[in-house]
Image (cartoon, rainbow, N blue to C red; front, side, top):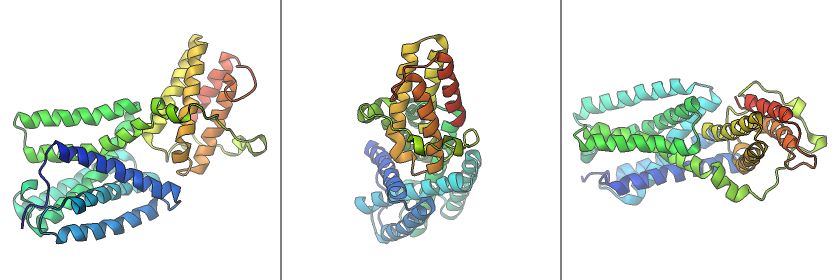
Length: 336
């Protein structure tokens, strides 16, 4: 029986990152566009994972298509498990990160106790391959939890969120070149490719990219007869609880920039930042609104009130800086 894992080259990592990004995007499409829901999506991908893994385990050697298909499916499945803990069960990300870290250590401990090796260059038996895929599943769940937790703590912009895991992977590569344990280096880099792939997707949805799509689209706030601003009152941060942290951080960055410029008397800068905020919010509507209709409606109503103070998408002239600051502060409070 030949080794069931491909040779680890630069192309291995490139394909791994692409599989992560494509797989998660496909899961989001099923979850949001088809209205299946997070839990049902997890059940669907768990069933698909069982099927593709069974096919992969029956093979006697490395075959590219079934192997990478399994990587795509397992990446989505592990991510969904973390999302359920966070979004459905309200488990804090630091707890999820700790639990998955312990679980991964347990998997490696049992794997070592039984096989006396953790090398991916000797995945030549059914038990070793089973341990390998179990470890891969947990690494994706752990990568999701730690990646989201980092963004939650730092509030970094999409660009910085890409550079962090990329820099850590580069550091691990350098340490490996200077003699660090190759098995440990591999699995650390494997964990980090999950947030890297996801953050690349977030960066593609950042303001500069989003404006290419949304720049010419007017913001449409609630119609007067349907304006339910007063009916949708949520605690600070509650409205965006189910939204991706990176997207919320990008919105908050633009709102903070507009507020800073309004306070300093830079009317042009405040207006420009508010318009960029409008463009990004409109570009994100298709992905955010299905996640939480109530939360999206609440933020959208406050967003419209803020835009009105700048005369953006409204016929009135810009209001006073004090009024602009008030509505921007209210928006930032709503976003936590």
